[in-house]
Length: 66
Image 1 (cartoon, helix red, strand yellow):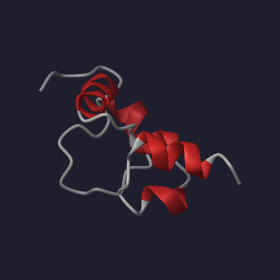
Image 2 (cartoon, rainbow, N blue to C red):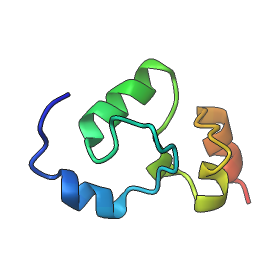
Image 3 (cartoon, rainbow, N blue to C red):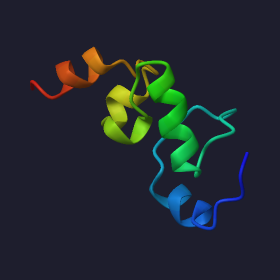
Image 4 (cartoon, one colour):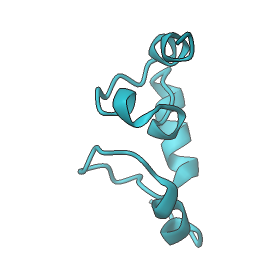
């Protein structure tokens, strides 16, 4: 993990509810992690969808069709 000078500010905007996440507030690590898994991070999803922990690209596209 890297020390992020923006971590506290990022945490104010982070809507991730996965509590044991070690990448919270470190957006570059979060993006890299989810990209490796062909997913998007929580901040791309509404609160309702985020709580499902389905970070798939297909779920993101489906959530935008409403």
